[in-house]
Image (cartoon, rainbow, N blue to C red; front, top):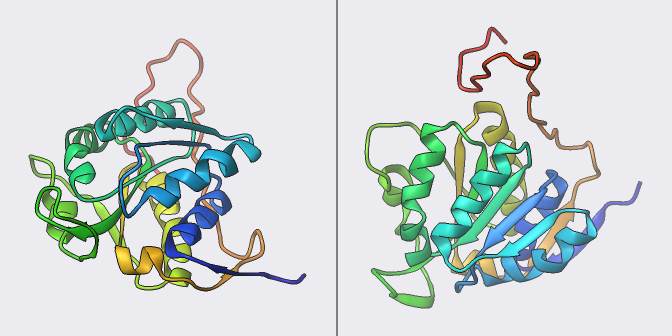
Length: 213
């Protein structure tokens, strides 16, 4: 079968990968330089029978995807800079409740409002230590558009496998640079589906309990 070869920006590669991985629900709030992700998913996701909602701010976007994930959906949000700062409280909640979700942070100059159209790679420590308390978290980075595709799919796989938020970082330069993207055939990259409970109705269900498998 002939592969799809696209000439796209990094943000577009992220969208293609999220749909490839089975994204069901996206909530976001437009913020440069991640806006194209929100814009593209606003019409691409409903075409795949998924749900898209633009929220009133970044914190509510994070809360929305947590709620959708708790109903069994594969979820993602995207933001940048100050928006990522606003999400930290809810990211901590997702860590505590072991809720699978993907958070894309397209990095820009800071601090605060900073430089919305300038590339930066200054959010690595925030991705690791942004929320209070001692906890583990998974953070991935991507350096080109093909890498963005691969790491986006991997972010979904890791979040579903380990029931945790996964943060994907790439910068404004990658987000807005057009490059060739080879979209793998469906099945060429393994996509992890969420493990469904076998607990009978009426029995207490604790998704965070250790499992033998």
